[in-house]
Amino acid sequence: MTEKEREILMKHYLNPKNRNMPHDNYEKVNSRNESCIDNINLYIKWNKDILEDIVFDGEACAISIASTSIMIENLIGKTKKEAEEYINNFTKMLQNEDCFLPKEAEIFKNIPEARKICATLPYIGIKKAILKK
Figure (cartoon, rainbow, N blue to C red):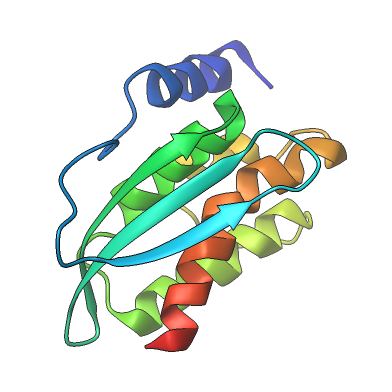
């Protein structure tokens, strides 16, 4: 990671978007990494097929928290189809395929292979919610 990428990661880790906010009447999905402490609950509010709001809580490493924060920032207001496209592009990026993602999401492009599960953890959760919808 470059110094700029580390700064973005730490910004989202130390001050994540939508963490520990009220979530009454939201759909809950959990993503957990069995091999470490990472355990994230996503709370999703749908308005028809639009992700109207997403909040989260849980314990996780800096990469998982930052990835969740960046994902939330990029998915709120998106349709189910747009969210699926974003998730697919994120997955492609981690597999070193060319795709378009907002700049902050690209900070995970060069993380070590062993840490990619940390970055994908919130995406596993949001994908579960989309498949239920």
